[in-house]
Every structure is written in C-alpha cells, then in structure tokens.
Length: 329
Image (cartoon, rainbow, N blue to C red; front, side, top):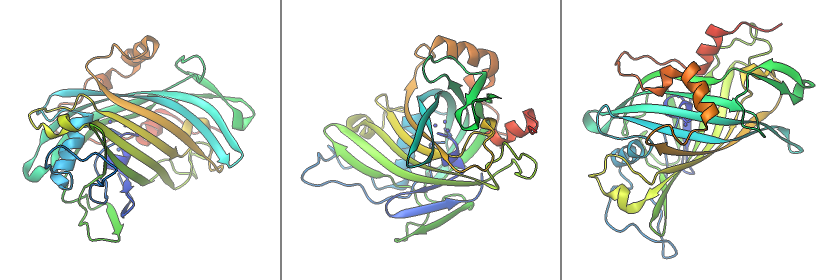
C-alpha cells in the first residue's frame, strides 16, 4: 500500500547505493513494494549480527520479508497498513512551509506464486487533513497562490492487481547499476540489537495522464517524478521465524519528495512536496482517528476491503483525477 507506498513499488524506479532502477511506466502498497536493488547485507564488529544464518541476500527471501512486513503471506488473507505524517512545500533552500497532513490506509491480499513471486490485490487512499487540527480537508487555501481556495482531491490507487518477481523486475524498469544484479531484489540490511533495518532509495518516473496542454493548472508536466528513502524494520527473531506469515513488529519510515498534488493548481511552478511518513500494520481500524475513519467509510469504502478479483485492474490516482475532475480555468 503513496505506502505512495504504491507507486514506487509497482510503477517506479528504486535504487540503492549500488543500483538504480529508472522506471518509465506504471503504484503505493503496491507503493512500497518491490523494485529495490541494493548491496548485500551489512554487518561488522560494531553491529549486532543476525542470530542465525538466513537469506538476507536472497532475492526471494527479501520479497517474502517485505510481503510479511506490509501484509501476510497467508494466501488471500487481508492485511491493513496505516500510514500518517506531515507534508511540507518547498520551492528552494529558503522555503519550507507546512501544507497539510496525510492519513492513509492500504489493504492488501497476497498470493504466493511459482519461483518466489507474489501476486497482490490491493488498494490505498491518502486523505489530506488540516496541519493543526487534523480535520479532513474539503477545501484548502494554497499559500503559493495568495491563499486561493482550492477543492481538495484525496489520493486513491484502487483497484490494484499485480505480480512481483524477486528475480526479474518488470520490463518497464530500466536498470543501471555498477554490478550485474540482474534486476534482482535485495535491500540494504543493517542490524542493531534485536532489530533488522532494510533500506532502499527510490526514484519513480511515470508518464503523467494529465496532459499539461489540457490540464494547465493541475498538471506538473509530461512526467510525474518522485524521490523517496524507505526503511523497513522488524525484530530479527520474527523475520527469521518462517512459521510467522506476518511480522508483528514491522514499522516503516519513509521520506519523500514528490510533485505538487493536482488539486493544488500549481501547474508547472517549480517546487516539491516533502513528506515524512510512518507506517505499520493494524488489526482493525480502531487506531485511525475517528473523523478520518468516518470520512473513509463514506467516501472510500471500496478501499477498506482489499479486492478479491484477479482481473489485472490497475487504476492510479491520476486516472481517477482525470475521470472525476474537469480542468480549471
């Protein structure tokens, strides 16, 4: 499951210190997922090593770890991922201002496939809330446009049906790296005490469905590009215990530079949104703020339950925006 957690996974380009995937097409929980190229697991005398031999450098094991972190590998069982954090605007080194906060839910079902691959049925939304009060935004005053009031469009990627193969990234990815990693998935692993931390740096570049010639105020241009730093963490003992289909101690921390949201009406003005996000699995929706949950139940009921149909559907936020909105004059 913005997490996108979706776009970087199913659509983008993910890199590590040793590798770069520059993608040109195609999510969020689907934004959090797989295309990470990285160096082998790191351990030295100053770090606590894993307690047993394990497939930390094995692509199939890395994808299984991630699938157990953001979901469960029990076939068809639904997992819920909750993500929240502040979002800031920046147009240069002397401009850094609060915009709004995000509250996100992603639901996913995972199905093991042959050769270590996994198929995911997922959906996610990101709700924008007032930076100070936490109220769900219907309208918002854009400080970059003289506080012009704009109509908020909450982000959604749904439905999503896709397959990830740890040994073969999709053909839409262009891979450039110093070593021949053959499009395989391995995170940068670090170990502190009883916890393992898996890092990746992501670059996502997608063709923008909002043609800037038509959507002059909404479109950031021909391409939609983000840069993100991901960290997935969990207890070593839980990760190494393969009898656990899901890793209870999972927490994710992500930092993102992404384009302006189309509802902000920034057009191709220079600048980015910077967000700091924390993600973890929840057994139910009780931890979600009640006003956020009430809005979700009313407007995003199709995301609160993960899809069940294997129909290769893959509909992202820009497609929804194009379908539900009209260009502003």
